[in-house]
View 1: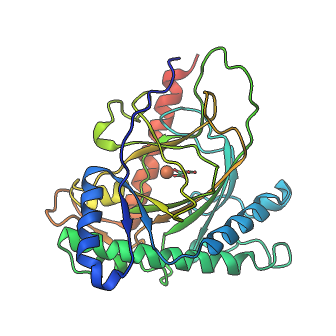
View 2 (view 1 turned 90 degrees about the vertical axis):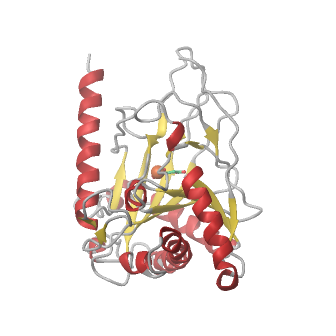
Length: 331
Ligand SMILES: O=C(O)CCC(=O)C(=O)O
Ligand SMILES: [Fe+2]
């Protein structure tokens, strides 16, 4: 297989400093990034670097538990919460992602899916505190995006109210395994997380210094259905500026009548010169509308759907695409 085609793209950096007085300027920058890039980083967001480090420590603590323990909080597709390992198949690859993940929520979906305090003391408290802080940054971004679309300022914030039991927002801890560095005579490219677009509203991603691997292929430039084989750009962690990497998901794309671009991305498994072979941790915070939120863009390009229907359809579409891919690659 041909080596990955890498190209340079600039990823806009947006500062949230002095948010209340700079909201118009930030809105303009965000709308520009959402329309043209789909990916951007956010700095000066008020989440302390120590808070992020502490959450990564909690994540490592969780994943270091034995499989027997983690299996007590298994992933539930119905609730979109819990732990799973080497299970997620992407339509782009038809193969399982080489990783484990643990999805947490604020609402009902977590019932029975936290490990007991005696097993992992303080984990739940730390995690919920971190999630609330990321929610607060998300709300600033959602305010600007609503304003940019011509909605009331609080329209998207209300639709993503995590204090309601209907909340679907997910914080996903991710752990990719160390990969053996060996000859790759066939040049086969496999994946830690196969190419995909997120189906949420907006994703905020935390990476650890040095643990790179995230690559993007912005939506408008994608020439194959799932971005496989197109031109990629590496998004390296930036510990100096404590940057959060953000991307628009499918939901906001349709909620904006396709004005804002959902963007393909992946975590490539190392196989080429310059790739990262070590164990990798990341944290993705998926802003999802409440189950009963009504989704329709200002120009009404698509019929109204509820947050629950949108998520269900996205999961079904993904499932069908995986089945088709498996059929097409079956021997
Ligand atoms: O681990 C990462 O850097 C990205 C993960 C991701 O894209 C996802 O879980 O949707
Ligand atoms: Fe993603």
